[in-house]
Length: 452
Image (cartoon, rainbow, N blue to C red; front, side):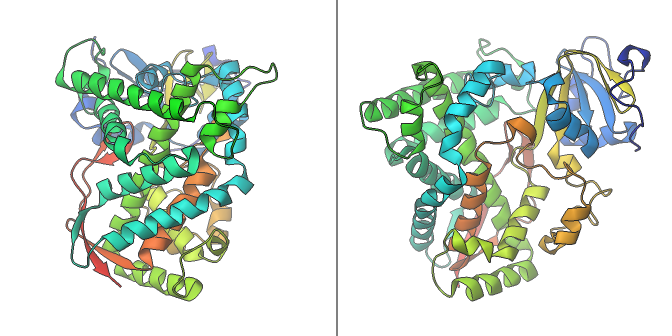
């Protein structure tokens, strides 16, 4: 697959449309996509780096080259908006929060929220990350079997609610987890339900409505509990007291949407990242031994701090490699605002673009032995040689994940805190994944605790 020398100055209307799999009348490529989304994506590669197809009446174009990804996310990002397909899906749960919003409203909200994620604030969030992780490790008995995916969801939700919202939500966890599961079920790319309107009374739609209604009640209660309190340093307080250049605060609706966005994205993706780290470590004993050696040497029996992260270099490589192989946010969606040239092809206005991290991260053009878990590959020399946007687990450009620093610190601190005391034996070497709102396992991830 070769990137064309054509540039954005070429007249798009003089260029051919991108190639792609055969499309059938009315259904387009919907049936092939629903049958097996992973196999469908695998089959797109033979058409090149710019591939078009149609699913559920929507025109799509997938980009497989880092240079194209960089154009869309960074150098020409103003020519590409948030995909209407994603906006409609996002509105079902996160409303008009940062994930789904656009234009001036998005810029206003991002400006109001950004101070909560300044570098100096992340250090203040480290204590609950470590304390809750240490508490979880202490609660597990040697030889006990745990549901690792569920354990990480509980842990990251507690961390998020305390660090960002200064709330103890143990009594509300089920409502939030049910809503997260409902939105993942609704967004399952391999299910017809993902493309059906909400009003059709399928079992998935009914569960989704019940779960999101309950979630809204819980969010409203959490916000009410904090109203009237003086300003503080946590994220929720910043939201409650933030004002724009006109002195206007967030509306109740905007506040709810941002709470929903961060409660969903802030713990679901991190819990999955940790689950995949534990799975990969259990399957690669040599990597686990190197990690143990580093933790024993650097921490010397103590719990980790933000300062320690600078010295936990191999821990960092383990996390990077896990996010490469299993990026929880596995595809970035955008939409063309006008006819554009990409890779020598004309991509019409209104086309939904998909930028699939889970494919680009395992492309043998950028990675040797791309399917292997090799943390040691992340040397300064390798990173220097890697094209920009051959690795982008947190997206990129102006709309990169605002919580990236928070998530990076949390994953590394939790991993180091638990791994210094415990190893895990996974009961299954295979991960059966699905493309929901996140890249998530379809079956329980059971592991046996082994105290070190």
